[in-house]
Amino acid sequence: MSQKIATREAYGDALKELGQVNENVVVLDADLSKSTKTAVFQKEFPERFFNMGIAEQNLMGTAAGFATSGKIPFASTFAMFATGRAFEIIRNSICYPKLNVKVCATHAGITVGEDGASHQALEDLACMRAIPNMTVINPADAVSAKKAVFAMADFNGPVYARFGRAAVPTIYDEDMKFEIGKGIQVKEGKDVSIIATGIMVSLALEASKILKSEGIDSRVIDIHTIKPIDKDLIIKAAKETGAIVTAEEHNIIGGLGSAVAEVLVENHPVSMKRVGTMDTFGESGKPNDLMKKYGLTGENIVKAVKEVLNQK
Image (spheres, rainbow, N blue to C red):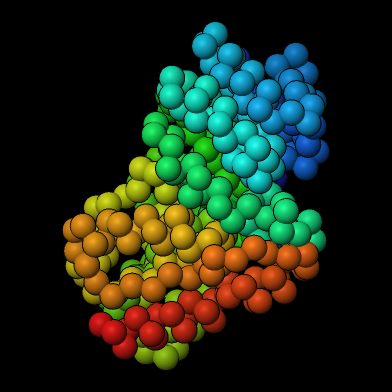
């Protein structure tokens, strides 16, 4: 793992690069372009950028209109407003007709920090994966975030992508392969599988190092696509290691942990523990302090691994 870059930064850079090679790409924002980093695209392609104001339902409805006209709209705002305030429009105007809209939300999770509970979307993955026709993506670092943007542009259909405010370690090399619906085994291991998404992938790798020093060989898997989830990779991990720990910067209800549990219980049940926020709202504070308070650390993953191994 090398330098730290926020996935929202990578999103902005990717939009600019994508705009240079695909003239059908248009970008819409809800008056947050400096924060969501869509301003990078706006500066390069002002005629293809649309500030819809603080009107998220209108943002999504207009994006749907662009999609019906053959454009590839990327609609951005904070995750709380995209999935909360505009849920009905995403459901009825984008997913029901299966329109080619990319809802790219930033400032998700507890690492929004000082903005507090009202802005810390910890339910967004659950909301979006419950809607028929929606694909849900949560990249782990800047490299995978940029590749996800290009993959979304090539994919025909509604997509929800989650990007973060805080800088996170870079895990992947530039030659990594990003395929929608396919997880990535980042590290081999035979005793237990740690299945993580988003910024928790780097913490899963940290936990794996701690576990190795204690004689526990842990596999680490990055599930960047929550829906459709990579069932084959999860079942393979369950069969080969016999124990699973999931890790997400999201409520343990409805997100990665729930999605993995659904796969396991229907196909190959094994002992499992979930690391995430425990059905609670966040609060204002420094991102690192909040991660510790709400149990989103490498140490918490290590603890969960030990608990699940005792059940194995």
